[in-house]
Structure formats: C-alpha cells, structure tokens
Image (cartoon, rainbow, N blue to C red; front, side, top):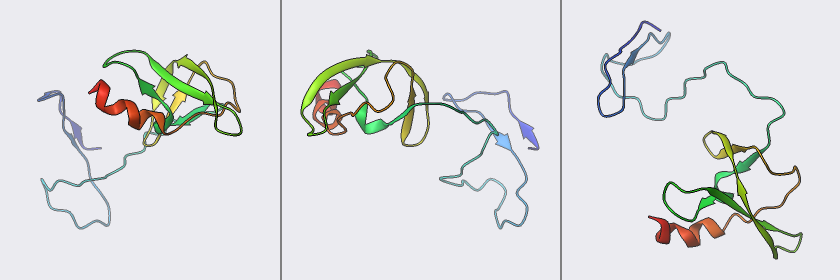
Length: 112
C-alpha cells in the first residue's frame, strides 16, 4: 500500500496502492475489487444473510427456526458477530439449527 488518506468524505476514505502486472490508469475506479486483510476466523458459525432479518430499522436481528420439513418451530433473536459478502457470523445459535431463508423477503417492504 502506498498511502492512506486521513480525510473522510461522505463516510469514505482513500487508499492508494500499487498493483503489479495490471493495466489500470491512475484514478480509474475499479468495481468489485477485493482486498484481503489477512484476517481469518476459525470455529465460527455462519448463516446465509437471507436467513437473518430485522423487524424494524436498526432493531434486533432474528432468524426463523424450521424443522426438517420446513415447518416453523421458533423465532430466535440472534447477535451478529461480523458480516462478509453473503454470510454473517452469529454468536448465540446452535450448530445444526435449520433456518428459513425466505422470510426476510416478506418483511423487507415493511421494514424499509
């Protein structure tokens, strides 16, 4: 990394770095660029983001627990540990718990 700006505009900062063997122009915006930080997590339980929903904006996070036949068993409040592209790390749910990945879409219009 060549430099990191300490000026924040609209909640964003700038990082300038060199890319070997790449054909980019200075100032060119590169979409979908992934920068790996070297951090890794072990023994982490993750869920697909589609399983996690909020009942109100800035509210708690929940999942709907289902059985093997996809029947609703329970609704659980969960804690989010971290977010990645398509998954979230959760703190207080047991491994092997089956979650409904479709309910979030039903609630989306109500929460926004």
